[in-house]
Length: 514
Image (cartoon, rainbow, N blue to C red; front, side, top):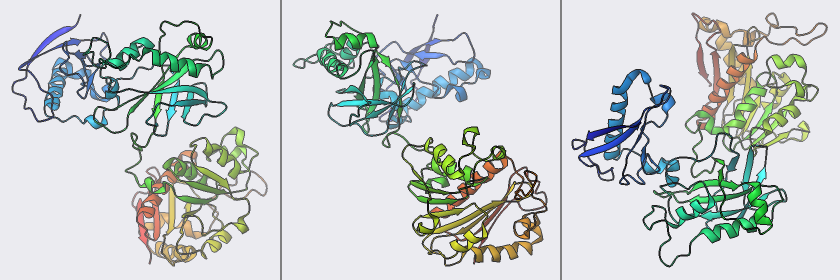
């Protein structure tokens, strides 16, 4: 049984554009059986219809993220304070209607927990057209506007107005909502406008006849946002039995809608989660990576996720089982060259990045990329990179041989005439003369005393380090490098991971040059 509460709200200040409250507002509160979920609150009138953070016209969204905002330990007092705060924010116009993604369709999604996901990455055309869905997995379909041979045809419908009361659970109910979004006309369209029921069924039937028997029939619904901007996108489907009936021109009175989950990745509605971080500097860049091992394999992963436009990989060494301890590979990569295995793995992260293997190093134009990362620890390569144009940012990265928990990032920034080897030598001398930087001396000592021989025989000495060490160091390096791409400065970064044991030393330092 819900609880009825009456709140005297005449003391709440009203701001233009805010929710207009009556002196006495009545709400119903439904308390769940488990304290893990917050109480639900709704009103019994349509006065709040279409206002931000009002779902389906009646439910008040007082917890945007209940997992972090709902504290059962605060008890009834905490809940009532939260409810009162909702009314204060609503009346004070402190809700942002432009960022209310689902408000165009009543403030909530409709998909089931196990629903198919539709990926939408391009803006929808403004007219009603036939679109297609391309299967990528058992759970994912990508929306496209030029039908390919393997696409499932689907109609695109445009709602004439926002749907603050939702979209319904059947085709006929959806048609009624499109005819009368706020039920001001008794569920019928405005005089002079034909009902949409026949249109929906006609376009569903036409699309179904282009698809194979036994397939569900999807559709796309574009709903204008009440505060302007990009429309909201919904994807639904009728089941295969209904679709087969449509294909055979059998009579269909109505059918339930299976609403799909929509991964809306259109730039007009999606903000990158890293848009305020230094890694944003990689967006659209062309990067060449030498060395796809302990550091390079992890750095490549982070750079691809950061939005790099094109990535070239160079490392012909083979993946072996022992490398899986710390490098970004898996069992199925063993036997392949690192560059090929990493290309395959990275291609699974993003569809829109161009990842290539450097087939012929001698013929490759090293002045072409925006950024060259040398993670190879190769002296001959360092000499070659020292001859490049000042227009290219060149970086060398490494970790200490003893633990893999101290990192070094040498940056020859764009516009600098300093050769990367000159920078390395000059800064190395300064570091070795500084007692407070003693823990970083091994970077220039040239000794293999702290290295490890991974297998018996003539095994090349390598550095100690775990996947956790190297992935953490690579993440620091990619973020630091992003700052140099945003603001070019030449110099050397030295840093120690928190567990490196740098007591009495300096855990992070940047040495500019000259």
